[in-house]
Length: 264
Ligand code: DGL
Image: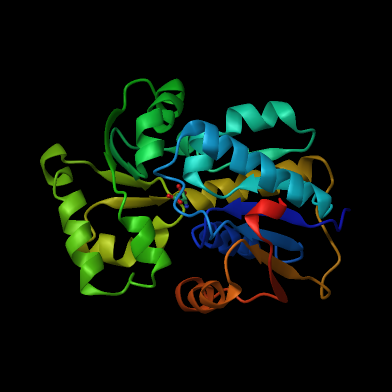
């Protein structure tokens, strides 16, 4: 048994969709969530920048004594995971590998940020496990700002969903991977757009299962119930993060603190 917290990070609110899955599966764990809200979005930044931001945040989370790091961001998973997993002596899980192993579709769509789609990380990882799958990818760069600005339930979200997803009607996909952790916040609208005919794959579920099985294997689960905490750190003001975390993910925290990015 190990009651050290699990550390997870994203550029902003998106990783909270991973946190929710983790809490469903492992309610006894303590969590430290890091939202890099002053530097969101990651999806339009270079690989070098995303690697450097990921390193800084991982160092910070390690200083908080976490037992595992979850990269709760599709973009950092695509561009930084291979590098940071070699640099740090702590288990690191990403959101792409576990889902890519578990897909059962033969004609699949992937939506994600510009940086993720450009990296081809999803294609490589899926084809490694399932060489005959047809994959159609599409970058949806406006989805993240829509979520971060609290516009996920508005008509603006509907128009942007139509703009990006209309191409998929031609490719006749049976499943769509929401390859960015912000996107499950738009899942209800996306599901409605496809009239429930496309199976939406939430990458957070497989990631949370992987974290559970890795901790179980090493006998590192926290079996102590009743005294658990969830803390959050953000690089920008905590106010809108707190409000949108509650509104979109029903997430509340025992403590939210701001840490300036230049102090990382
Ligand atoms: N949640 C991040 C992801 O999964 C958002 C990236 C961004 O900040 O652009 O890719």
